[in-house]
Structure formats: C-alpha cells, structure tokens
Amino acid sequence: MQNTLFTSRAFKLILIFLLLSLLVGVRIVEHLFYDPLRLYFEQDYLHVDLPEMNTFKLCLHIILRYSINTLISLGVIWIAFQNKGYIVFSVKFYTITLLTLLFVLVILLNNQIQNQNLGIFYVRRFLIQPLFLFLLLPAFHYQNKISKSKI
Image (cartoon, rainbow, N blue to C red; front, top):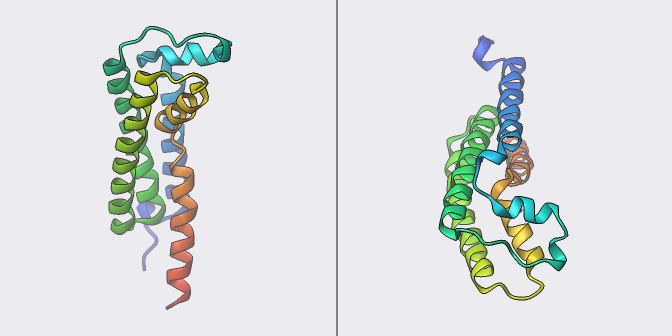
C-alpha cells in the first residue's frame, strides 16, 4: 500500500490536533451561547436560587453547542479509525444521549427540586463539553485491537 499524504500517520495526527483545537475554540467562545447557568455555577450556586432564564432558548443553544462538538468529535473518530460502523454507532450514541440528557435537564430545571443544583450542573456539563469523545476513542481503539487480534 502506498503511503500518501492523506493516509500518513503524521497527517492524521495533525488533523486530529486541529479538530481538538476546534473543540477548545468552542469552549473559548462559550460566551456566544445563551447560558445563564454558566455565571450561576461560577458563583456560590449552592446557596442561591436558579437565575431567571428562557428554558427554550437555553435548550436550543445547548443543542447547537452539542451539535458542533459532536460534528468535530465525529471528525476525530473518522480520522482516527476510518470505520463507517464506528461513525454510525457514534451518531446513534450521540443522538440518544442528547435526547435523554436534554429531557433530564428540562425536568430538573422546571421542577427545581431543592438541592438538585449538582444534578443540573453535571447534566449540563455532559451536554456542553465533548466528554463522550474521550469515552468513545478508547472504546473504539480497544475494539480495533480486539478485531485485529482475531484475524
């Protein structure tokens, strides 16, 4: 097999680095997304009520940010493994996770059960940060390793 620029390991690592830099960039410009909870959790949130917010607008911006992070993460997964099955699984995983966590977040925000601030914090964190990429990459790497050892 010929080692071209697009299949070389160094080129793949550079592309992955660039995509990971984009994920950092999304974090840097997080102030562009509507999120009154960002400032709330930076303060003494355990002793203060939740701020007034437009839950619909918050959910739209969370979905937007989640989608951007997901697309970049899918790019990383594709470059790392070039396996269509991994992409299909990841799309299903990201979609189910978004729907589930967004549903839980809306319930937590609308019911405002006392002492549920940490629940809101963590559910929101999973939605706005690309944490699932760091679960899927090692899982796919392990799957790849297992598949190759069976050959």
